[in-house]
Amino acid sequence: MKIDDIKKICVVGAGNMGHQIATLCALNGFQTSCTDIDQTTLDKAAAFADHYLPGRVAKGKLTEQAAKETRERLTFTPNLAEAAEGADYVIEAAVEVLEIKRRIFADLDDMTPAHAVLATNSSAIVSSKIADATGRPDKVVNLHFFNPALVMKLVEVVQGPHVSQETADLSMALCEKLGKAPVRLNKEVNGFLLNRIFFAIIKEAEWLLEMGVASVEDIDKACVFGAGHPMGPFRLMDLTGIDLAYTMGMEAFRNSGDRSDLPVPSLVKHFVNGEYGQKTGQGWYDYKE
Ligand SMILES: NC(=O)c1ccc[n+]([C@@H]2O[C@H](COP(=O)([O-])OP(=O)(O)OC[C@H]3O[C@@H](n4cnc5c(N)ncnc54)[C@H](O)[C@@H]3O)[C@@H](O)[C@H]2O)c1
Image 1 (spheres, rainbow, N blue to C red):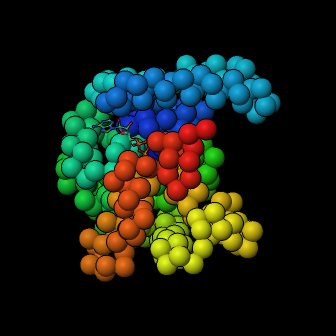
Image 2: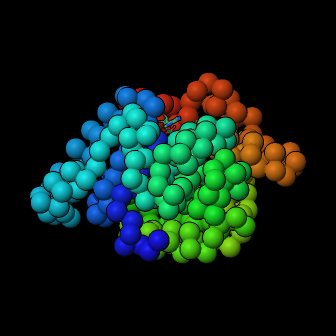
């Protein structure tokens, strides 16, 4: 399959990442169907598009006609089979649970045309752990967007040993067509590329906090004003989700067996309290106001 053969994209999961990836695909000319098991999340995703597109028009970034056509290309449905029907490329952005992803991919394998590429946006699960749930492992690949997906240019395309050259090349080309700056990882590695670098920074920030060296606010301030980061590590975790930081820490520990990879006690406390960051109104910072 060539890049111009991709007409329809299916996005599975309409949460934090999925709703923006779906809007991005529609904006760039693809017929896009977005699905989620939760109707409230789907309604929120549709409301986001209804608000975001006119906002782009108001800012002079999009014509009214383009906004109208983008919205017409974007559909939302709770029915996976309906969303997957006729899709040339699928981007799965459902919850970060291996067994759920494997089930989704097995279903997608039955529901999509044989030529379709099935990509996962997972932050921590390499696609070789999912590929054998399908009959097309050569077409199962990691396509890792960053949050917020409409804004962040980087996408990591991870070419595990099972991924064909055609799938990797097509995925790179798709990212470029979406206006992104894709990078290719030639092998699977825990945490992929940028998160490995971030992980080292976040780990150090967490231990500085844990040791009582400085406050959340001051550690963030140091990274912003000293290192020029757009936001500090704690603010970033609140944006991407403390649940995700917890899951990634546990996954890193499972892979390495190194106890220093485990989430620090203060992060675990936020996690067990359901304080996941911006999306729950409380994380390292309070967002209830
Ligand atoms: N949040 C981030 O910053 C970020 C960045 C890059 C990648 N990711 C990855 O993207 C994926 C989604 O993360 P998120 O932050 O959007 O999570 P989220 O919790 O905001 O959204 C996940 C959505 O998946 C839905 N879902 C659960 N089971 C489903 C199923 N069987 N079929 C369809 N939908 C289902 C949920 O209802 C929920 O709306 C994860 O794999 C995560 O690792 C997240």
